[in-house]
Figure (spheres, rainbow over the protein chains, first blue to last red):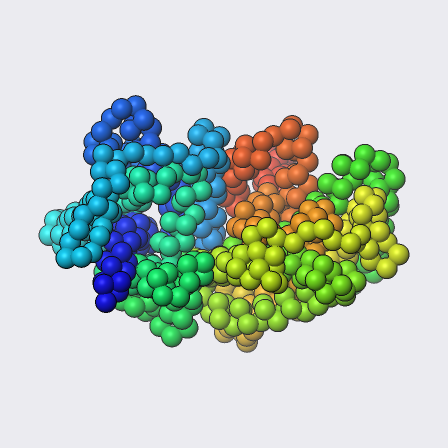
Length: 291
Length: 344
């Protein structure tokens, strides 16, 4: 019983981290209409920015928001220079190839600058653990969980309550209609892209102390992000959160009770089952014709 | 736009049939093939440096993989991020067949090819109802599953260390451990594959693939079974990738779960995009550029990825049809200018 409770808590904590990555991906897919294969690279950049700042002696808690800022700047530049120009071309797989190549280039760049070896990021929370009715959670994981929940709630409220947020929702529902009602759609798309990669950067900075950072760390994040997003329904933000928690808990249960070495295959098993029986995902809407 | 494409395509087909100069075209193409065969032989005799010749052989094997990717990318217009699955099936098929079962290389490869087609049929039925990013993501995910399986099924695959220490690889009397022979074999197979794909692209099936890529809805409305064409193209692409994987084994001499890594697909994809997806020999040109330029300039692999990825981004932004499109655009522009001059 205790083991089960501990496993479930581990799964929820894991899922909260996945949710931040996946919400960014699904936001970009819903608003900008591209599957961002460079998402993992922004995740890694968040981790590396955090490493650079903390290794200069900056406090981790200050470094995290600054890392997000760094990723925001890089993301905005990327959007401005590349995404905006390649997206509206007539070749429909163009955006996919462009973001994929961007991700490759970024990873190669990180290897050239920082080397291929893992680097440590130290957090003042260190290895301390918290005990809560017989369940242990490391303080860093509790911090990740808290931050993720906070950010996701803030995003949800912003989308629901603010004018800009409502404009974002409008573009997601019907970009042409939004344009006709006077919403600056290109600006909303820029905003959504930058917000999405900022979420990836935040996740990278948050997870850096528990996983160490390495240039290809983004691949697993990207793969997890996509499994979550497909499971939840592409473009659906509640779906991404639900999918993240499901995958987090399923992974934790599978690791504890079945096999650690086969766990990476589990997410894809779930995705294929989803696509076979409910192709639009758990909370997704039936796909309209959009590339 | 797409409808006009469709129209021009039909026009071109009709024009080709009416001109009746098929014989001349066949003769010209026979000359091309003969020239290529002579070039292969000349290369194999002219270069004696085993490193260069082996690398050239490996490049030919990998170009075969790029051709397989291009059947999907240039044929039905999907981005097959999971194509290295079949590359891996070929490599593991050859390795397990030779190393564990003691089969001759060619028998092991044949079994792997059949297996790859069966696997493609199963995967295709599941994944090909998806399009665009969904298809790319799921096919990528399946290679992740394959990598996990290859790492964990130690009795069959040798686990994370992989399989190595094969007996000398030979096809009948041809010793693939000899660099010249290896190059001649891979280059000949590549040449045959190109001839086959050129014929395929001209066949009704090639036209069906074109129509599915350009406008699936229109294709369906004129009676093309879109799902069937996509599945057939996928099943056709698999043995090419598997053959490439098997032919890479004499060069690598080891097969590890890393063959399922997306990095392999990325290399192939870069080759296709460099050379241009709409040209049958495009991937081969891309493969040559992708291997020769870094070799000549002694580039670090990561610099290579960085440079070529950036080139791809630029190509996709300015010339989505591949580098040769730039040449075509330049020729058109120059041609138009001379026309303008004349009219003035």
